[in-house]
Amino acid sequence: MRSFLIFLLTLIVPFFQGFAQHTSFHLTLKWSASAGIRTPESALFDPEKKFIYVSNINGDATAKDGNGFISLLDMNGHIHQLHWTDGLNAPKGLAFFGNKLYVADIDQLVIIDRNTGKIIDRITVPGASFLNDVATDEHGNVYVSDTRQAKVFRYANGRMTTFLEGDQMQGANGLFVWKGKLWILTHHGLFTDDLNTHRLELFSDEVKDGDGIWNINDQDLIVSQWVGNVYVMDNKGHATKILDTRDQHKNTADISYIPSMHLLLVPTFMGNSVDAYVLSTQ
Image (cartoon, rainbow, N blue to C red; front, side):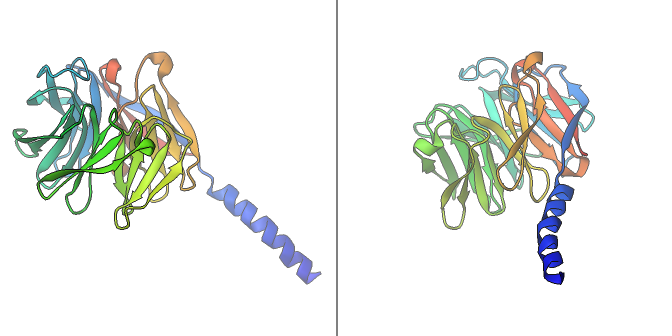
């Protein structure tokens, strides 16, 4: 009898543990910033300065027209400085390291002084045609995706090189460095590249053609698709949709997340706003 009870417990306990650990996520709109915002592609929180950088394409995402600019928002969605940096073409992904803000701009990696908003340098990427997202690692290496060339470039020690390329990188877009890996959203799904071994693996194929990616805790990720969908993805690669704004004609471009405030930042691209949502659990 005792052996039977032990056997029964080995079946029941994991079931209830799994049930107890299941968490559902919910988004509630907190604010929407739209005054002067024009075709926003990326929104990134600066925890030191308490501002949100917003890349404004301001027109055609492929045109070298000089219309693009970076805005600063405060934490309540108010415009602190609409034109913090001007003279860009079609700025998209943003990332910072030290006192530098890195911006993907068609075929250039633009480096901006994080304190003043002034352009420090423009690094032309040979063969690039649609640089999309940017991420930095702990050593200050900069990774830039090219969606149309199926490549990820790396800028390190003053040199730009091809880091990843090939069929698996088709549609390469969202980049994120987390847990010693570079996470890459592509046409096929979400890949990881170990930054120590350079081993590339498919983590999940449940969200294809993803745009933005961020972690929300030490286990789960939040991932967007430009068409208007946002998903939470667990550590097994299973995705659950938590936002769908397609009927509102709002895109969900290069998102970012502020863990301390449980706040998701969503640039709506053709919606011409940055929407902030509180992420809660149930």
